[in-house]
Image (cartoon, rainbow, N blue to C red; front, side, top):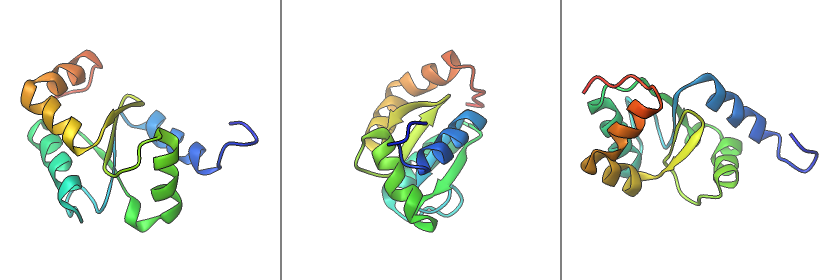
Length: 113
């Protein structure tokens, strides 16, 4: 962490280091609070992926911080093994093409489907 880096970045890094799949979303994977977050949570559930969800609505610092961290302006944001994958449209397209399933396997993330 540099002196100029926001403190919230270390919280984000800790989440990414401790969990293979992290979804920053509005709401939770069991109770999404926006349609885009719901789509990504549903895709991951269909694949049987163990997801660590972070509700950005419960923490304004994380909500703002994750956008700065990824340099991506919208929520949800999916990370696999610490790598930023994208938001709803990207995740949906990757899932429909089979690319998401392939990426999860390549990264060693257990997929049920």
